[in-house]
Length: 267
Ligand code: URA
Image (cartoon, rainbow, N blue to C red; front, top):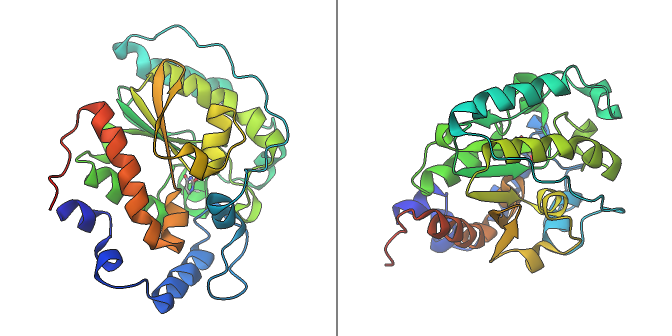
């Protein structure tokens, strides 16, 4: 029960989703501009572009560039320095047009020795202002998800496909994601976590290099650069459709099983 509570699932199993509550959450979201979405829904029950993408369609990736070669393993004691070198390589980046609208580059956050890494889509307004990933409303839910797994945020590592905020929190364009993702791959190779959780379709697409619906990728373990990768819903999507938290929790439990973490007892 505690795990469900931590995930905010109380509403889910007590009663059907309250549309008024959902609408209020969506409005709050539109104001803080935290999630990587484009516009508020046109009518109740209509999802934003990202939410629709999560549910039904193939992510908008036109060309899949080959993934970079896997870098040599970095000793745990050297991982912080390796990450710092990657950060220095990024510098005051102007490689794609996203730099024009950013306040801060959002490199990543967490333990260089993490066994678990989360990858999101791109910074929102709060992240852009603070230079840290997942610090807005979606970040609060991600923190709850991490806590429900029995972990602390400082124990995991969190990064995004793109490191600069897309205007209006739109989905990153393929050119932007393809320009930025090599640095994400370097971060992943430096940390070499045992398990990566891809949050949403954009992260799943650019990590796995596969054009598939989220439904086709969720619920199983993918082999990824010698690591294990699990796909689940983006927290921003879960804020919009809390009914899917149960499915997300099932995905997180797959990650927990792979990490050897204690699973909640049933009932
Ligand atoms: N959404 C993301 O995908 N990443 C963040 O860092 C914040 C919101």
